[in-house]
Length: 334
Ligand code: NAD
Image (cartoon, rainbow, N blue to C red; front, side, top):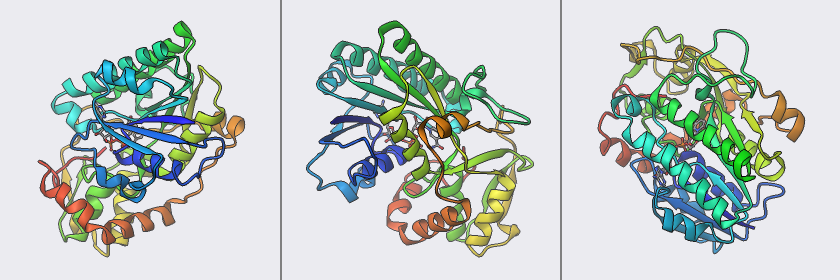
């Protein structure tokens, strides 16, 4: 099976590629894995170092908006797993241009070329942020989309385009919508790696508003296993929520990280809230659990402890990213 993975040098895409090449996913025996990645600030070839010597891996440095290139790579592809995106909400508030270009136009380019090349299956990796914010209960997949940030709106646009390509052209496509991920190799602008690396270095961490915004935290490994299940067995045209981590407010998450890093509440700095900051996300995962047998495996306690240990042990991975990143150590988090 030839698999095309877009954004495979990013946080989640690289985890998927490392696991795929470890033959961790039943029903997905890859004979070739083509990673297409533009290596933006968030893309890092080092994320693929553990599988660099695998002969099945072909890394292509390129843009998903480049139709001729994507068209060539799409030939003979059995499965497309589309992770590539601009992914950071705060950056989309500063300037949404790259978000519309990559997330919307890039996705449309992939969908068009997939149809023309007669590609096999296509998994579009979306996010729970397309649903907006929910006070109580959880979103089922047929809940109306009501994105609030430019990032979420661009993801909702691509998510709807993807479903339209299934209905219009019969593309064998599924959409996944996942909750907040954490784990190793996450760019240190997102909450968990930013806070962890700041705390390791004796710095303060910026907590938005009253810290009461609530998220369902899922280990990246559970997200990728959910994607693999959808790729292998998902029904074309269907959306599958992925989640089932542990719901925590940002205040509670910060408390866990302080404890794991041996710091106290004096390390927390309150900052003004993010514009249009969604209060709570919660996905209903009944569908993927019942249809595809999905269940998260990594509990938050162990997952966070392992993640903090990974950042402690891998300073050489994150330090250059932080020193080279405008605003790192500042106030950015998802
Ligand atoms: P990331 O920012 O770490 O990685 C994105 C990757 O896409 C990078 O390697 C980057 O170089 C690449 N890329 C960006 N623009 C490109 C372009 N024009 N052409 C080719 N490659 C390009 O993001 P992530 O956290 O790994 O997220 C991956 C996907 O999962 C995204 O689609 C995101 O919306 C979705 N998602 C993320 C989360 C989360 O918590 N991080 C949760 C749910 C869904």
